[in-house]
Image (cartoon, rainbow, N blue to C red):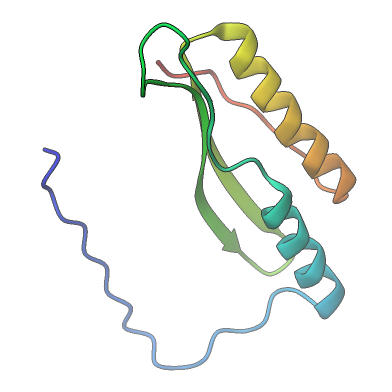
Length: 105
Protein backbone atom coordinates (compact mmCIF):
# COMPACT_ATOMS: atom_id res chain seq x y z
CA UNK A 1 0.00 0.00 0.00
CA UNK A 2 1.53 3.30 -1.12
CA UNK A 3 -0.16 5.11 1.76
CA UNK A 4 1.14 2.79 4.48
CA UNK A 5 2.84 4.46 7.42
CA UNK A 6 5.93 3.22 9.21
CA UNK A 7 6.35 3.87 12.91
CA UNK A 8 9.35 3.23 15.13
CA UNK A 9 9.86 3.55 18.85
CA UNK A 10 13.05 3.61 20.87
CA UNK A 11 12.70 2.77 24.55
CA UNK A 12 16.35 3.04 25.63
CA UNK A 13 16.85 6.34 27.47
CA UNK A 14 20.61 5.96 27.95
CA UNK A 15 22.95 7.50 25.39
CA UNK A 16 24.36 4.98 22.91
CA UNK A 17 27.99 3.95 23.15
CA UNK A 18 30.12 5.57 20.48
CA UNK A 19 31.15 2.73 18.16
CA UNK A 20 33.46 4.76 15.90
CA UNK A 21 36.49 6.86 16.74
CA UNK A 22 36.74 10.34 15.19
CA UNK A 23 38.84 9.22 12.23
CA UNK A 24 36.50 6.32 11.41
CA UNK A 25 33.45 8.56 11.75
CA UNK A 26 35.01 11.12 9.40
CA UNK A 27 35.82 8.39 6.87
CA UNK A 28 32.29 7.00 7.08
CA UNK A 29 30.76 10.45 6.55
CA UNK A 30 33.06 11.13 3.58
CA UNK A 31 32.10 7.78 2.07
CA UNK A 32 28.38 8.47 2.56
CA UNK A 33 28.74 11.88 0.92
CA UNK A 34 30.59 10.29 -2.02
CA UNK A 35 28.05 7.55 -2.75
CA UNK A 36 25.83 8.03 -5.79
CA UNK A 37 22.38 8.65 -4.33
CA UNK A 38 19.11 9.11 -6.21
CA UNK A 39 18.45 8.84 -9.94
CA UNK A 40 21.59 8.70 -12.04
CA UNK A 41 19.98 8.20 -15.44
CA UNK A 42 16.55 8.68 -16.95
CA UNK A 43 15.12 6.72 -19.86
CA UNK A 44 15.60 8.22 -23.30
CA UNK A 45 12.44 6.41 -24.45
CA UNK A 46 9.97 7.21 -21.66
CA UNK A 47 10.18 10.74 -20.26
CA UNK A 48 10.46 10.99 -16.46
CA UNK A 49 11.15 7.26 -16.09
CA UNK A 50 14.17 6.61 -13.89
CA UNK A 51 16.37 4.06 -15.63
CA UNK A 52 19.08 3.70 -12.97
CA UNK A 53 19.16 4.81 -9.35
CA UNK A 54 20.70 4.11 -5.97
CA UNK A 55 19.08 4.55 -2.57
CA UNK A 56 20.96 4.84 0.71
CA UNK A 57 18.69 2.45 2.61
CA UNK A 58 20.32 2.33 6.04
CA UNK A 59 23.45 2.93 8.09
CA UNK A 60 24.06 0.98 11.27
CA UNK A 61 26.99 0.75 13.66
CA UNK A 62 27.96 -1.88 16.17
CA UNK A 63 31.00 -2.34 18.39
CA UNK A 64 33.59 -2.62 15.64
CA UNK A 65 32.08 -1.73 12.27
CA UNK A 66 29.57 0.30 10.35
CA UNK A 67 27.25 -1.26 7.79
CA UNK A 68 25.86 0.78 4.91
CA UNK A 69 23.00 -0.72 2.91
CA UNK A 70 22.27 0.61 -0.56
CA UNK A 71 19.48 -0.44 -2.91
CA UNK A 72 20.46 -0.04 -6.55
CA UNK A 73 18.03 -0.54 -9.41
CA UNK A 74 18.14 -0.29 -13.17
CA UNK A 75 16.07 -1.46 -16.09
CA UNK A 76 19.37 -1.95 -17.98
CA UNK A 77 21.67 -4.69 -16.64
CA UNK A 78 24.99 -3.05 -17.67
CA UNK A 79 23.89 0.22 -16.05
CA UNK A 80 23.13 -1.61 -12.81
CA UNK A 81 26.57 -3.22 -12.86
CA UNK A 82 28.13 0.19 -13.50
CA UNK A 83 26.28 1.62 -10.49
CA UNK A 84 27.43 -1.27 -8.33
CA UNK A 85 31.01 -0.74 -9.50
CA UNK A 86 30.81 2.94 -8.55
CA UNK A 87 29.65 1.94 -5.08
CA UNK A 88 32.47 -0.63 -4.78
CA UNK A 89 34.99 2.03 -5.85
CA UNK A 90 33.78 4.52 -3.24
CA UNK A 91 33.91 1.81 -0.57
CA UNK A 92 37.42 0.78 -1.60
CA UNK A 93 38.67 4.37 -1.47
CA UNK A 94 37.25 4.61 2.06
CA UNK A 95 39.00 1.39 3.08
CA UNK A 96 35.72 -0.49 3.25
CA UNK A 97 34.46 -3.72 1.72
CA UNK A 98 31.44 -3.79 -0.59
CA UNK A 99 29.31 -6.91 -0.90
CA UNK A 100 26.55 -7.17 -3.51
CA UNK A 101 23.51 -9.39 -3.23
CA UNK A 102 21.45 -10.63 -6.12
CA UNK A 103 19.73 -7.88 -8.08
CA UNK A 104 16.02 -7.32 -7.62
CA UNK A 105 13.69 -6.17 -10.39
